[in-house]
Amino acid sequence: MFTEFGESIRYDSDDPAIGDSFFIGTFNNFQITPKLRLSPSLRYSQLKNKVDQSLYFSGFIARTTLNYQFNNNLSFRVIGEFNDFDEAYFFQPLLKWNPNPFTIFYIGGTNGYSRVDEKSHYGIENSQLYLKFQYLFNW
Image (cartoon, rainbow, N blue to C red):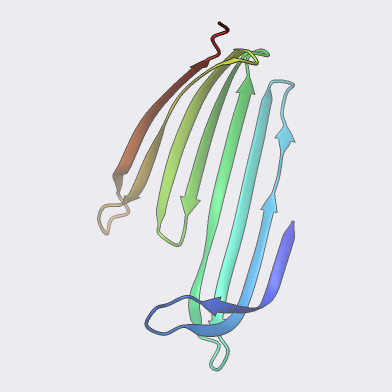
């Protein structure tokens, strides 16, 4: 767990200011089984006006990473994150195959979701699918 407080700059092109900041967070790592690891984290930050103590911003980012190691060569990871500042979240799965130090194969994707309407419905804002294959040829 960590915390930080003091003065910080509000980066606003129209009205930059120095305010009182507070930041607290935690990064955790739990080895559930020899093959399964859960890594949640939470970061909260706020910045207040130095004069009247009104909030410039306040919010948190909650993130969870789940790793499963099938064997030495094959693993799967899923990341989920909620960003309270933007009221958006994303989901990112990744499958990795690494049979030797010179060969690697990744396949994964990212889906970003944001609020669609006032009824708290979320819709896909952006998506990516990626693939990587790397092999060293020895001539």
